[in-house]
Length: 251
Image (cartoon, rainbow, N blue to C red; front, top):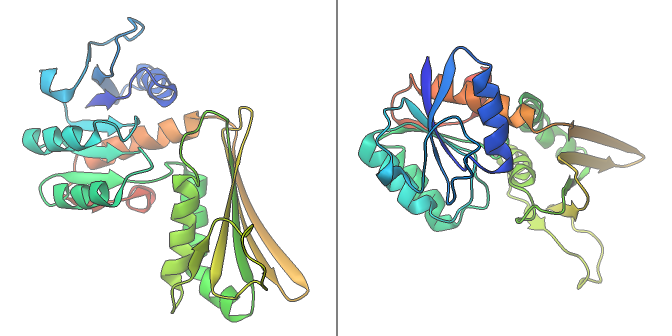
């Protein structure tokens, strides 16, 4: 059984992961980390990892960037593998994550779902061919009205998968309202929609001469992310130090 410390245990995803582990004989949350203890968890809750004395095999972070630097330092100090699902990291924080991966296993993914990671694989394998054929590339993402960051981490991961496959880097364009010019070829448009209770909707559009390819992934429940995070935790608990992502988990 894999023992998990869950940062952000009282958040939306924290509650989803807690419910998944309660019904999974191969994983158990031994402690949670959150600013407040609501009393709803079936395990002890601490404000930070420094206060937590529970023995664990891996940590899952589904929280916010606030306090993340200290949390990473504490994971390194305890040699605790880290599944990092929080998005919106700064350049300095990303550098800190890479540095931490030299001492502990770190799995970082903007999206933990099987479907999104299959889409990322498709984009890596086919974007260059479509770009060479004259297709323009646009990404549209939609999320609920409580999401803080935009564009989503998943949209940026899709854009990166495309850009990494191209011989020349394309510019990311988030807003054309100040432009008055034809669309240049070497750009990837990224648009964000916020409203209602949309769990997650990502669409990649390849618009070519006289034809359009639209590839869409829709999340109907947050459980797809929670299941992915738990599977990633089981995988990472057995890994050596280094950087990993969901492609390593799904094979």
